[in-house]
Structure formats: structure tokens, C-alpha cells
Length: 203
Image (cartoon, rainbow, N blue to C red):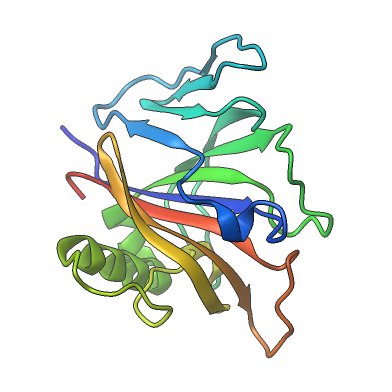
């Protein structure tokens, strides 16, 4: 039985260094949607080879120099601001663009989409927007119609730039550089980050 998954990737990016000039996503992602026992595999790499990551039926590749990712099964989150079902998180270790403020740690999160939408109105809206954009490839990607990072809760996406549809093995989604806040604020390079949100092909 296939699982329906939603994938979010949040990576802090220095806008003057990498962010505004990334022509493609630096990540290659494949998701096997058949249930498997959780097992972490990180293949040994050298400076010229990517890291092969596998955990809990999810596999992806990190380019050389981007660090490694440790997979962890995360419990459900309760509460009004960040409710979520159990999910899998990969924390990137050794990422070359650390956030000096510690607000945005580079990570990949994989959620069961239907369960997430059922308990989080922000997730439901974000998944709805994402599905619409994937089903209608001619629609222009704008801040008003792009998906948001659901676990940001009530924070507003202030802007989105470099928005682009991306397809991986078994995953389609949208990438962008964005910033979030609950109040008017100046937008700077340390408050902006790379954000990819995708759905498996079975949604």
C-alpha cells in the first residue's frame, strides 16, 4: 500500500553567495512509497562524490560538499501552532552555509500528506496550493499562490523569488527562496532561505 507523502526542504542560503543565482536545485530526491523498516544508510564518500542517504523507505542524494543527513523518526506534534502527524526528519550536518542566527537549520522533512492536512489548516492549504500548481503547469508562480512551510504556522510568507517547478524520481514540487514573519520586518539574507515543497506522484 502506498503512502501519500509531502516533502519539505528548508535550507538557509546566503543570498549573496548561492541563493539568488541557483539555476537548479542542488538536491536529487527519490522517495520509495512502500512501507519499510527504518534503517539509516550513509555511503562513504570523498570530496568528488555525492552522499547517498537512505532511511525509512526514503532515499536521496546530497552533492559533495553539502554535508551528510541523519534520518530520525519524529513523534506527532500537538498544539495549536505546529500540529503534525509523525514524520521523518533528516538534519543536514556539515552544511556549508550555516545560519548564524540559528533560526533555520537545514533539513528535509517527510510527512504523510492526508494526515497532515487533516490536523493542520496550514498544511491543508499548502498542499492544496501545491497540488493546484502541479496540475496546472501554465499557472505563473507567485507569492500569492505558492505553498508555504506548514510548520511555520501563523507566520506569513513575506516574499518568494526564484520560484520554479522541479521534478525528481517519484516527487514533484516547487522551490523558492522565501522569508517568514508574524510582523512587518526588513528582509535580509539571514532571514531568507531555500524552500522546496513537493508531493509524491501518488499525492
